[in-house]
Length: 260
Length: 316
Image (cartoon, rainbow over all chains, first blue to last red):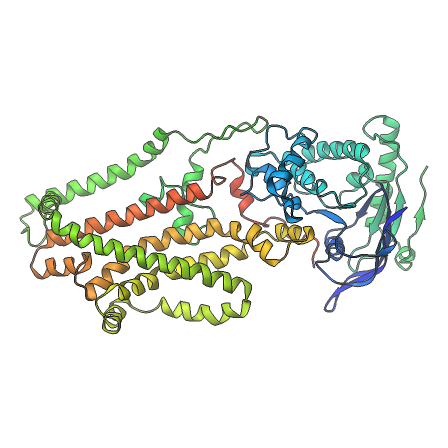
């Protein structure tokens, strides 16, 4: 079942064309990534989805035109409020929805262990390590119980080792919960590791130059065979992104590529 | 002032160079890095640590007083020219009743003026935050208000508003309002864009975002402004009294000067300095209580500096 469907989304800021006809879809329980160079307008796309910006084109959710926000949004970095204790950061979305602080705390408290944050409920965000902050930010995002997660380069600010750890952790969490998720990233490995499908974005004005299915078995942590397949896929994606051949850019329509 | 700023921890988001220096120094002097993987217990640097940091300041201060005492005693200077610190202290004690009687009105004027200034700065800064054109209308006026020489303005305000509390409130407000107003407006504007965006995506309205994000984001800025302006408050009140008052440290200084009693002038100066220090200490104390997260963790400093270091990210 298709949850999110975008048809021919465009957005310009004055003369600057940022998005030029983006069409994509995300099925229920699917993990989809948008991979593209910095400055391509990936974040603009999310701002269109959350309603912070208005653009042209058709946005549908569960078949109906997009209304309100069915999304839980996780911004770049963690956006934890330094003046709120970790648990009050996590309950933020529920509080905005009108849940009382006490009820919200009771609702999120049992989830701290699963997110590796047990014992840190009443710590200040500044007392957490980078990885823990990201986990707290993700917890804050998922407890909103929206239909779909929007993840905007969630691990971009982390060091390489922590990032790899967080990717493994997120893959494990996703296998258990099967969230419908759309991830923005410019990390090829991250996209291949986490996604079911990947949309490749061109440089600005952004259009989709390729749609790539990632048929690797999950969990993706084990097996040299999986690792080798992933490496081939990564190399291919890098080639597409760094040497966009002319025929491909002249066809903004998605090019279905299969991998086996 | 720098001497004072060092032991009392300055904020990181301070508005002035002076304050910034204080913040850097104190954070450079070992904030103990805590083990990040074990739950925090919320400790604080030991009291002895703070005392140790105060030793150089105390030493310098004592040295200065000793040199002054020595020069006044053995330099052949008349006490009506330069009284020794010991004499100032002695005379202050002998005239303690008169000093106290004149200190109370000054405290009253300072606190009333500062309270008015604080409330006005808060209300106006919130209005400016919600109505951008108001900022362009108000700020030039406010900046002009800071160019007025107090010496000229104080007698005029007394002329217009008499010898009561009103001219003092106005003058204290005139000198303390601006730093707090600027600090608040900049503090609101310093709210992380990501936090605002996230709240908007959660469905929070403008007021909600102000309350949940902009107001707390402004706190470090506000306290930086508060610490600056509170040091002007007592001086502002004394200026107003100097220009005309029935009672107060300002008029007391004027009378002592006219009676060739520099020792009593200095005694009153010492009282006013003590008042300012007490107010400053109070501001720092309130800041500690209002922002308990300030001293938590070791990365709080770079986190607060906002979205720097992420240049060239998804333009638009």
